[in-house]
View (cartoon, rainbow, N blue to C red):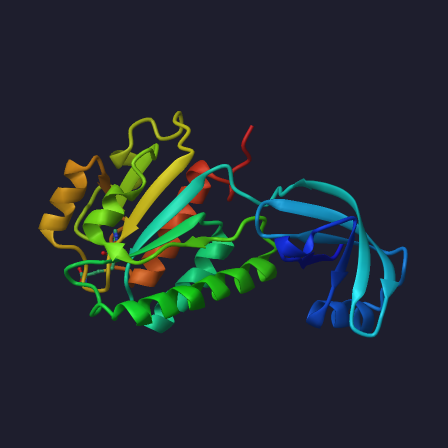
Length: 251
Ligand code: SAH
């Protein structure tokens, strides 16, 4: 069944009006007719099965047949704290993290991160990243949008999600892989994970010491130094494989 994104605010009653490019696509490309069924998802965790009732010049009206919780969300809630990178890299990162199923992105400033933009620029950047996350959500048909939080300092990012089951820093100077950093990796069910990744310039020893003092383990991503944006994707893929919904069938 074809699925379309619908803003949560539009789901107000039993009949919903789809407008814009999705309506045009349904009519002109898919040539759907009254009685045909489509799927809708709202990016807030709900999906809908809908029936086309009426096609007008500007909209497609559908009735909701069924509402259910999205099945495309991972059982692992992966939160990524990423040191600020250049704008374009952050854009790409948000798109890719959304596809991999990351729940939240915490951008942070650190000793070696790119110069800190002023507050106005930071909030404009955040809005832009939120838009990119929604676009990526539509494309990958995910149930829940990746939340983008305000840029904070490294120290605040480290302390932000204290009730995580696993707190891990991927550190370029670490030689232990994640399977050594966490004991009995396959027996443990980590449901909420905070993964911290550094800037192009890497972490300082002091930052790592601080993270360890706050209960973080450190892990390597292998013998090669990855670019920051590659490292974030590799780390999240590993976490989604070990604890979430990529690659392994969970009983
Ligand atoms: N400038 C540093 C590399 C920083 S890479 C150097 O030359 O040593 C940017 C970030 O990606 C790192 O802070 C880390 O979080 C992550 N990263 C890259 N390669 C990694 C690896 N092999 N193991 C763990 N983390 C890695």
